[in-house]
Image (tube, rainbow, N blue to C red):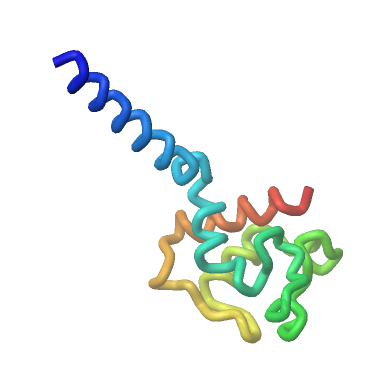
Length: 107
């Protein structure tokens, strides 16, 4: 009986350890990595092939810095230039979380 309980505890600990990194990410970070990083880069610097080809500004660039949160939400919702619209694909809350996460990458 004790061995069985120990096995259950070990399985529970392993499940928690495996799941923890997913929960450690903010909603904005997880959504950014899933939907935005392919073009903007995981670090937001847009230095990858897609970022360079599409001339995406880095989150550290003056062009990006001058955008208001409201402009970023609108651009993400409706799309801009080659960037697709995420209206209907992401909720308003998810879009706002992504914008907040992108602002955190500026630092």
